[in-house]
Structures are given as C-alpha cells and as structure tokens.
Image 1 (cartoon, rainbow, N blue to C red):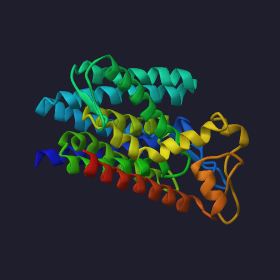
Image 2: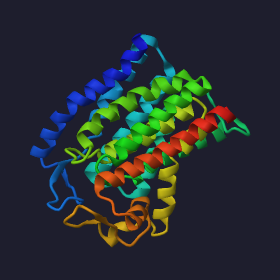
Image 3: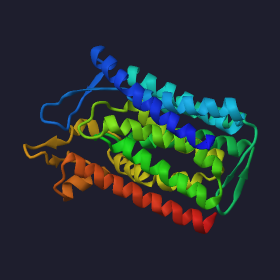
Amino acid sequence: MVEAVYPFIALAVTFVVAPFLIHSFLSRNIIGRDRHKPDRPRVAEMGGIAPFMGIMCATVLIVFIEGDTAIAAFAGSLAIVFAVGVLDDRRALRQRTKLALLLTSGVPIIALGKGSLDLVFATLDYGAAYALLVVVGMSAAANLTNILEGFNGEACGMGVIATAFLMIDAHVIGAPGLARMLAPVCLAYLALLYYNRYPARVFPGDTGTLLIGGAIGAATILEGVPLLGVIVLAPHIVEFFLKATVRFGGVKYGPTSVDDDGILHPPPYRSLANTLTRRMRLNEPHLVAVLWGIEMAAGCASIVVAYFLY
C-alpha cells in the first residue's frame, strides 16, 4: 500500500508547485515565445523544475524509509542532469559542454559499485567497459529527449508514454525496481502535461526535457535492461539522425510557420515533425497526437522485446 503512495506524492507536488513557478517566471521574465501561435504569446520557461521537485520528494522518501541504494543512485543521477538543464536554460551551454557535463550523471550509478547490463546476446558485468557504457548512455539518453521537443505537450506527453510502457515492461520481465524508479517520473510529468498541453502555460525547458531521458537512461541501466530504454527512445533516435543531416543547424532555416487556419507549414529541413506536416495538413494538437502515437508504437515494440528476449 505504501509503495503506491510515492508516485502520487510526485504528482501532487508537481501539480501544486507548477502554478507558482509559472507566476514567478512570468513576473521575472523567464519566458519563451510560443512560435507556433499567430500572436507568439509569452510562456513561462523552465517548467521542468516542478517535476524534479516532485520526483525528488518521492525518491528521498523511498531512500529514507526503505534504504534503497539503487533509488539513491537514481536520484543522484537525476540531480546532476537537472543541474545541467538549469545551466543550459540560463546560460545556453554549447552542445559539447552540455554533453561533457552530462557524462558526469553516470557517476552515481558507477559509485553504487555493482551492476551488470543485459545486452540480450551478452552480459556486461561491472568494470571499466560497464562504466564507459553508463556515462555515455546517460549523456545520450538525456540529449535524445531534448532533441524531440518544440510543440505544446510534445516532450512531456512522449515522456509519460515512454515511462508508462517501461513500467509495463517491468511487470513483464519481473523487474519491480524499474517500475519503482519510473512511476514517480511518469506521474510527475503527467502533472506537468496539464500545464504544458495546448495551449501551453509553461514550457519544460531543457531543465525538463533532459530530465526525462536521464530518468529513462538511469532506470534502465540500473536494472540492467538498457535495450528497453533504447527501444522506447526510438522516435528520438530517428529524430537525431534526421537532424544530423543538417548538422543540427535547423535554426538557420527558421521556425515552423502557422497559417490563419492553424495549419503548420514546416521549414525545409528533415525532422519527424517536418516530415509529418509536409505530408499531412496538421495543426499543433493533431501533430502532437501523431507523435504520441509513434511513441506508443515504440512502447508496444518494447513490450514485445521484453516478453520474448528477457
């Protein structure tokens, strides 16, 4: 019974804190412009602070009450990812700097001093290769969820879906630790989605988007099932390779434009959103719904892999 309470603590804290952050950030001009609305309204930034606070409240309670060292390592990794996100939102870090800083988010996992990674066809035990894969995997996972963002509800919704499917995977493979780590993340971002859905009152910022990938990376690595994390992040991996074709320089092409009917018209470079809006007449909510559907397909694939390969 107590176990079920922790995720709802994360949800409640996030839901209560977010409006205060929105009001504070608007008054202090910590804002972004919603470029996909005709009037480009001011929207509070750095909304990821709210789910971080919710997740930390839940995980600290788990550690304090139950002494779970894996959860402590998970929380430590998320704290580092969060700190990098805050720096990036406030200082606009160079990509190389951000990647390097995110490598350190794997340190709490390595410091746990135990673990192995089930790579399906081989098992990588604790050691130098394990440590290398952990730091690279954490940096990659956090950056992937930062890449696929830009529309109201996109990153938060896909994060909720990805973590929810990983919780199902946890049941399939008998890994309760995976669900224990990700349930607070899932419900915290569900609470933030209430404020980030169309029309958004707050953007997650890099503070929030990096945290989603960091949580997925940390949880799947700690439970030794990184392949499941890779599968649920498949849409983000596709986005990475599409944007790599323009060396991640999409900004120079300008933003997606919106006509008087709310239909999105993409700039001339490749991305998931641009491919979809180039082929279909989509407004912002419909585009995000399609992207959520793609994430659900990736989640279903993870269940198949979990069932047959683990």
